[in-house]
Image (cartoon, helix red, strand yellow):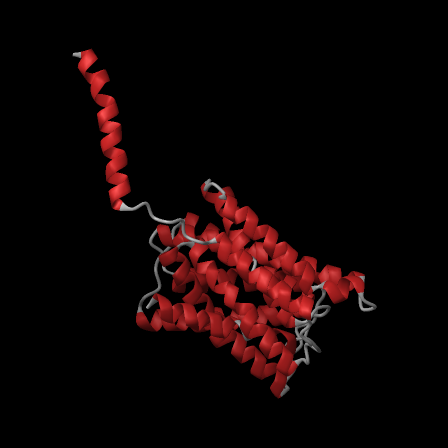
Length: 315
């Protein structure tokens, strides 16, 4: 079951970056996000009410859903969609793959978990890999403040996504399932963003082209209803660190799609950077080797033997 959810998440979110790119145009970025998550929340609430699986929540649960909506369904997508204006969507996906590193850092903040040395080494490899991936933008004629801003926004969006992972983990530990928390989180996120649009005077336009409506529906059903439910279910079952490991495969899917659709050109530094990012993520969440039972038994026996003299003296 976990493997099926894992592969489903990789395939869906490895291709949603192209749909995000297709959203850019007549409709303002915040409005597109409102449409996406308002429709996704509506679909989830209808399914939950018809199946009678909508769980009741107390005030604490709603407050966490509010924060989750801000992190997972509002700010991070604002960052990603703005970043897509200045850097290829495949590269946005590569930056997103550093979510494993951010999850480790946020686990330290949220749960007090110690950051191991392999996490620091993996983070260094990931940052070096990002530098190589953006080498043409940094040193070539195409270098611009917009490219650097796009990179910064993609990193900020990834950090918000990771914070949302921690909040979802808290909710699931309290017995709330992702379907219910996602429905409320998406509703809260869409509402907050809609209020922001009203205060900013942003028009709620609709582009009735096949390109826009098709990409919107793809982002609503597979990208939001299915993708977020599958991924956050993995967060609850495997923990945020292990679940985020699937983001390692997002760049493989996204960059290949970007090369086909957008004409992204692979270069030697970019390939080397991709390898380093993936190696860094693997290193971050490499499981420590288990101590063999024989070694553990021998160590226990040694400790017991060492304790015998002190016990004899005490008697």
